[in-house]
Amino acid sequence: MDETVAEFIKRTILKIPMNELTTILKAWDFLSENQLQTVNFRQRKESVVQHLIRLCEEKRASLNDAALLDIVYTQFHQHQKVWDVFQMSKGPGEDVDLFDMKQFKNAFKKILQRALKNVTVSFRETEENAIWIRIAWGTQYTKPNQYKPTYVVYYSQTPYAFKSSSTLRRNTPLLGQTFETHNSTTPLQERSLGLDINMDSRIIHENKVEKERVQRITQETFGDYSQPQLEFAQYKLETKFKSDLNGSILAEREEPLRCLIKFSSPHLLEALKSLAPAGIADAPLSPLLTCIPNKRKNYFKIRDK
Amino acid sequence: MLKEDCASELKVHLAKSLPLPSSVNRPRIDLIVFVVNLHSKYSLQNTEESLRHVDASFFLGKVCFLATGAGRESHCSIHRHTVVKLAHTYQSPLLYCDLEVEGFRATMAQRLVRVLQICAGHVPGVSALNLLSLLRSSEGPSLEDL
Image 1 (cartoon, rainbow over the protein chains, first blue to last red):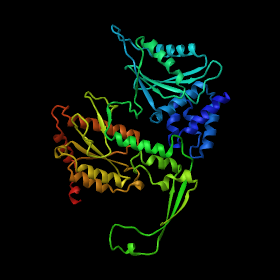
Image 2: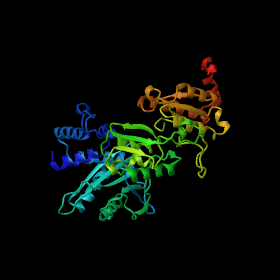
Image 3: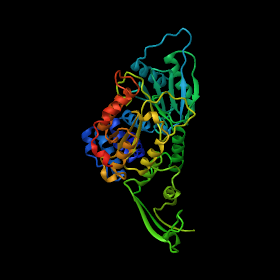
């Protein structure tokens, strides 16, 4: 297995949160059930990753396999990307084409490869008649950069295609060309959505606004990538009792109460990150919890000011 | 539920709580399923508060409760009897399903789609009220002791 491919797979797997790892690996469908069973997923992440890379080597993972893993990861984390929507239009008098998936894939790949020698194009079809296309861009003289790919999701039964925003903007007209040729008519119109997309229109999220607010705050607080692995956090409280009830015995107590709270988890920071999106806690979370990576400590003493 | 074969057009509205935001046009709602997570007191509290916003006509067979998490008893912070009592108070059926288990989820989805079709009036000869009385007559007398 090529060193660059190994590195690419390693970095992709490292991005995957531990709680999603088995699901994503299964969806990738590259390593066999038997191989996956030999992995102890309870170890430290680095050890799990090393083991997985060895298994990929055994199976001689190719660049295409690695690209597929990247697509699967992105499908699970599509909400972390910003997508632009393109609508294709047909000229007057055009017949409805019968869509041939194989022909589309071949044509798409050919057009890009003809224009740019160095480009990696990978496809993955999903159940909802969608095709996910991953493009890694290179130049005439450099190999494709696998870490800045563009994704295009095309729903074959519709005139819509979604493209992930990419820093490599110069390639947008080229992508436009691939679709033009396929549907052979007037150029594309661009419409930006920039919001969370739930691909199934039969599911309506009533609390969309709130959901988006929570997602945004969670992303602002925790960032896009995996949290550092932490197994516990401890808070020692020495605070006076506070209560709304008047005349309670504890409220009159002068001495602060001493109390120790310990949070433990196989991956504490990921667990905290998932609290608000899961509806278990309100967003934003208490800064006492979210300051852990910033302050670089997980033992806290809290006293009254 | 959407994966089920259903001759009618099925839409699912997901909401954290009621009332729903009023600024939206919605098709008629045929069934309300309150999902109560037995692991979370907050879930029960939320459900109780949301119930106050439901029009009385829904309680003629168009409401049901779905309790999840009963399988992991050690994680339950709500006693089973609490939800049984809640369902009894609102005269609506209570279903149990550990939503985390794929197999149970699929079966429950099937069941709910059938219930939904009846509530929407898409099953000739059976109404939501019929179904409700059918389900009620199978409840044991022990509920009266609660």
